[in-house]
Length: 424
Image (cartoon, rainbow, N blue to C red; front, side, top):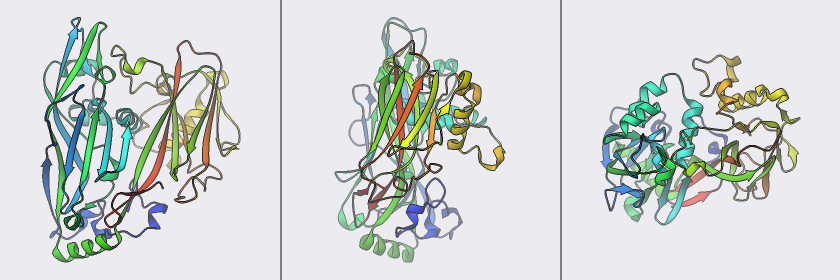
């Protein structure tokens, strides 16, 4: 099993029914007898979706081996409006802005549910963006300048996007055991409110319509001897898949934030990100780029604590509004302090953007002291909590909301242990 391209320490402790040669990361090097075929699935039920018919659900196949790591959704989007004639009408940057949540279920058990998935995808895209991303993926993913997206909004367009479900995309899904048990995997998307994901002028109420939705994935044709071994192992011991999970907390504040991120569910915390937005703007269609703007609240200092013990030796400060220390912590999180700073493409947010519209406070727990109770701990992590304290120099002009994104690692036990989740 792998996690973010590497074998995790947590994953090493668990048996897997996936032979190494069948790992998604090694599958291209195996025998040519293992053949891939591209398949498409249509949603169940209705086929036209908008701000009133918001749920798109797929019943996933349960007879075979499937690779969703390179899967995508495709669909047509048409925009419309009522009220005053709009001066512009467009989807927020990134077509995933239309999607509020994604949920994977095994029968009636929730394997993974991610709310605010549009915010998460926009954040991750901006953090990892290189100079080539906007050129290569703009047409598929609805990325572009306001002028480009205005033009897209004048006609029906076909878009593609990733599945946004790490529980499905991290490894090959071996569903052979379901042949004998009749269990079903279901993937459900919930669309965003129209006022939160569309951009237009004052006095206009925008809306969207989605049609012709398909989920395109790859099916693997395994040799009988491999398939038989996988089925036997799958049915007797099951498969354990490590995947990412995220949760958001929103807390209004004025001059001092003390935000406790409690951790009651045996989850293994990987990192925290905190940023700031203006209250009410998320559902205002006259506000542009709302998923990509992270306000600089003019902080004086910030500090993280784990179980009342300081993570940093001292608070991170902003002398004379200089944010270089905070930006260095941010670079540590995104991985650009490795290799003495030698990288082909710079981080998605440079320093100038960081201090204007890309201000993010980052805590990577892989660098934190005394973090063994939070990392790679399946059973004992029941009463720990993390605290972030942020002090501002002065009360902000607008009412600010602090958004804290907590990144967890979890385990999905499927196969013989259908639907069981370890809050790793």
